[in-house]
Amino acid sequence: MKNTKGIVARVGAQADRKQRAKPVDVLADPEIQRHTERILALREEERQTREQLGRIIAAIGAELIAVKEALDRRAGKTAWLRWLKDHVHYSADTAENYMRVARFAEKFRNVSEFFTLDPSALYRLAALPDTITATLTPDTLLTDPRTGRQAPLKAMSARALDRALDALEGKTTPQRPKPPAAELTLKGDTREEFAGDTLRIMTRLSDQVVEIRGRKGSLTGDSKKRVLAAIESLRCIVLKWPAWATPAGPEQALPKNPGG
Image 1 (tube, rainbow, N blue to C red):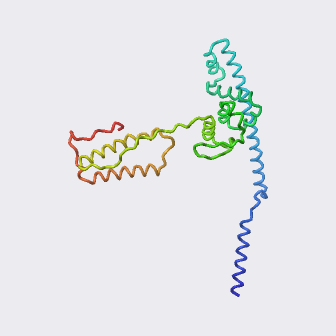
Image 2: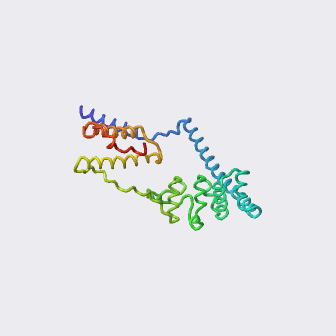
Image 3: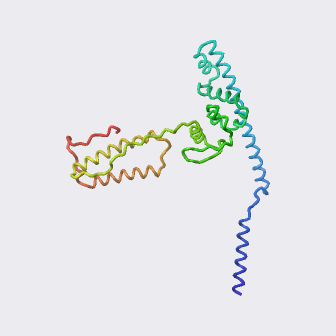
């Protein structure tokens, strides 16, 4: 009797697992189906809008080329920049991007394939040598040299696309120079030598810590707490030892950190 109950229980449990594992047709819910269809329609509208934007950029670029050529013939080189600023309010860089896209559209029949891309990607492609551009489509697989990952051109982020196209052009990504290695060991045989090592290391650390101002991003609260706790721990260690805590005379006072 017990065996029969156990078998029935196992069969029931298996049936429950299969039922839970069975995919649910969420679109059977009319509300979810309605929202899904609306999203798909808007996504198509977004794609068409982006394509239209690419065409508009190329058309503006063609007009800019015509004006620049006319002004260069009649009024000299500076007239072009004055006209941009006073009449159409474009920067020289923006105008150059638009004109490159116009030239790109004039040279390549398949340019409409690229018009659905983000404008920043369109500008980058338009700046490539013709020999490279002719080999690309939005679906071309490119490799990001930093990560080694491959992805279709149209799916890459702006930075990844920049790096991948730089690699195609034979450009190398400049490496940030590494700071010279610092000796961080306190190895003085006498207390005076030990103190000299400490001062050297603390001065170097102070000089480097202020460089955080030039770094990107923001600190998390946890990072701030850990750094400040480490500094406080070092301060406590120093003050607990009489040899450090004894005030120095005026002639022995440590130099002030220039960074404040």
